[in-house]
Image (cartoon, rainbow, N blue to C red; front, side, top):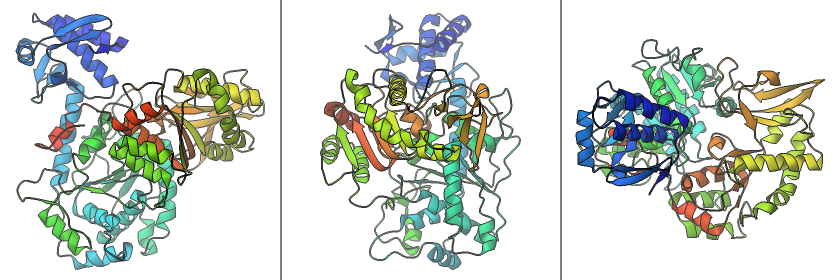
Length: 605
């Protein structure tokens, strides 16, 4: 029997529904209201009724018996608080037998409608010989039978007003999109207004740094280089926050002024924010999403990028687009779908397959592929293969030994940033290493590991944590503060400035900014962080801790995300059975978005 512990907000919402419900089913529907509210807090956008009906659930130690689906549907018909799609009631049940909070049903429905409209728009570029010459300039033909998937991604973005470019770290997503922007400007006589954005300040700063480097190497005129934007905003800044409101300045009544909008790290964007972004685009805007479809979904509700990518890895393509790709230089046969049977998002997704960061003998690359495929035995074997020195699996130490096991690692990796003189150096050196935890609580969770790390560093004499704020304390913001332009996940370091302490952050513009510790929004110490919070970041060296037992929340997406945060080495501390079970499991996000975007396709998460 599933056991669920509700949060206060779930209980308050259930009591509200109970008071509002005028039918004889108030108790049943209030229990369902609590469950759907709880589901949203767990990252789902809805409650899948088919998984719960005709069964029992333990809610806050109270057994709740749920009727069969046909009985439940009759209850909904008589309900005053549960409506069908389009009705204005607190709870909405759709034809797919999913129960939503009205707000999330609206976000999901509006987003799907807008994206399907965007995807319908196709530029007629089939007979444009000048386009192929441009492609040759920016993506010179590769030798041999290899297809240049970056070139195909550019073709996709030039042809469709909406496209998703997916690929793991090192596959060249940023390189590709910079070239795409140059091609778009060349075709529009350098007159396009372009915006670049990312979910967090850190991911925005990384994109800005990459864009600046790559723009200088573009094979085009200086005039075109100058109209490739160098500024990268957070999504919140792009949309324009409004104090005291969850709404933004730019919306369907006040559209963004851009002709092209590019969003990096799209896997981190939750349903609510993606819906607000798409609603704010003008009707002629081109939207390009970059991300890794295999990463964890956003911390907040939804799995938008995964839903957009659908059940396939980009293929099959329409027959027309496959023909165009062959003309543009595709070197291998492409899967096609019969004419007239194409799902609405056909030809909008391109997956980059060649990795340019890791060599063929890279353990990180090999392990990430095996984890992605769910091959637990293969993943375990490669971690013990001495020909891959950049990866290692070590048995999880006993709880009482964890601090001593961490001691030398912390001294080696954190001493450099704690002994440096400048904020810029401290931030740079701190980001070379991170401990990633699968969970927040428990002896191997973030809270416990941060406490152990602080104790270790104090014993070594590298920090003096006598008060809440001390020289060298790393902090992570846990709420959005639009006035300070600080967002959930932003990381800073406390440094002593004379007799006072200030905290320093790397801004999205690449500049170091600081503020008194007394002005910090809600935050936490961050020697270690959850894998979820690590999305959008990269470190030279990563240590990942899995818990003692397999459980809910562990899956291959989590482990894949942790491994691919590492550039040079990825070490994992875990019991072998937990490691293998994590690789073999998938983390599902319940959502109706994929079914809306890919009707008739397998919608398993």
